[in-house]
Length: 311
Image (cartoon, rainbow, N blue to C red):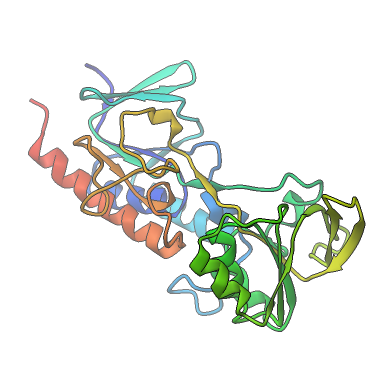
């Protein structure tokens, strides 16, 4: 079969770019499929202060661009395309990119997880300017401020509790009068004096795009219809993420929420197919951990190809 790639990497966030750097330096000539969210979650972030090597911090899009240039320097290729489906039943694996079919001896899945958003009129314009889906990434920027967390599950409780380290007050807003969160997480949040709860309440919009920062939320009570504004400096979404793994169907093992299951860090149940970054990491979801797992995946691919060199 002609034009079979040694390795294809699906996704162009921290995990994908790091995998590309390592695979390219191993002379595997990796092809990176950028996906429907090129750059991943970092492309939606402003200042990144917790990635090692940047004492003054670095803008998220700049960090992603630096990684890509580094991978390209060693020979990695990039293609702006979206993987619609894959056949992993035999090698070379067959990848469907629109009307184009790509074959590869190995595959690194670094397609990430997309944050669930509320779909508010001004929400997307304020991402990175007070609207965030990652408390551990952005909480520090709102030290001494009043902020809001949206959600009613364990994710929301964890975000709210963590954010009390920085905020003077955290308002947890939930659309229902009952929580999905586990009893222990709910009790922990309820015992925290900095956390206040607004139940039966939805966010109608977030202010203020003219100031390019969050100044407050427009709220509505779902039972009374009452509307009002809540002054806050940030809105954190605690309604979860959606792993971008549906294109593999049932060929790979997933947990109940669709995250890819791996063993020995990055191995899927299909030999030659590896998963790294947020598509398989629902616990840490940090740029540095994604980069680390991307490195692992590339090293495993190099070893796999040596052991299964095509005759």
